[in-house]
View 1 (cartoon, each protein chain N blue to C red):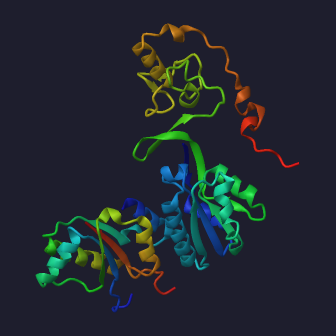
View 2 (tube, rainbow over the protein chains, first blue to last red):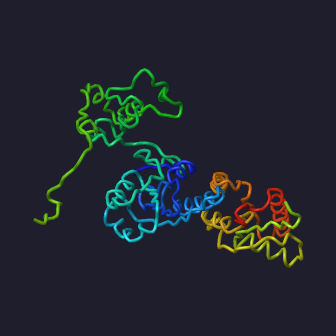
View 3 (cartoon, chains in turn purple, blue, brown):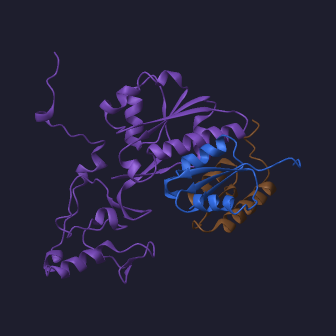
Length: 226
Length: 67
Length: 53
């Protein structure tokens, strides 16, 4: 899922500037599960903004609402009638949700309350780690299910490098070497020879190198009105 | 600070332990400050952070979660 | 509890205003004691500045 992290309260206050009436819009999908921008976090932030602005002598009226998924029109459309009551809208969704709000409601500016951090998973309670970089050309089938693009600091295809010491990456003592993990998996399955085949440079044209990406599925498109 | 300041403290008390303890304190005629306001909850794990903030927003001087 | 205290710090009310206590149903004396302690601590911290705003 998409992992996000709430921006510092000071930064959010600065973004909101002179706004007197603020709507905090939470998202019920990824950022709910990573405790960054769901219903609970929206309620906490709204309350915090009301108190802090009051203490600083310029009270804001802050309401909150949480939609199931801020990155789909169907879920945000019902907000249309409410937005006119506010001078600022603060989204607690990922960057996709913030942009969906701005695109769907172009007459309002929706501000971001989170930093969208990465695609990953909760390794344990309270610890999230990056697992995918959406490179567009998955090689997990070659690397025994461990991604060297997302998890090797150098994104090596024929690793490990000399910075791998006792299974740990030189970048940080709490960062396992992805290639060490891949080798361990290869040994476990008795298929080390598969890793000895040299991988050519990766085709990055399916990544961000070709600019923003797009998928079109003609079979799923609705008939266009002429 | 004026002498008249009597802290108003909201106490979220678990039905099974702290609320029963408070009840017993009453039965035992124990004295404790009068500024405390008790809210009984089925379990202290039930208390949300937003509810603690709500208490402060509405003038509580302190909040206790007892379970 | 730590999370609630962090928010109170960020807001500017002070994280010491919130406290968790563990009691059993038989601990009436400790309950009264905890309430006294908390009241004294809050008395030192002073009133919630939002109260009369």
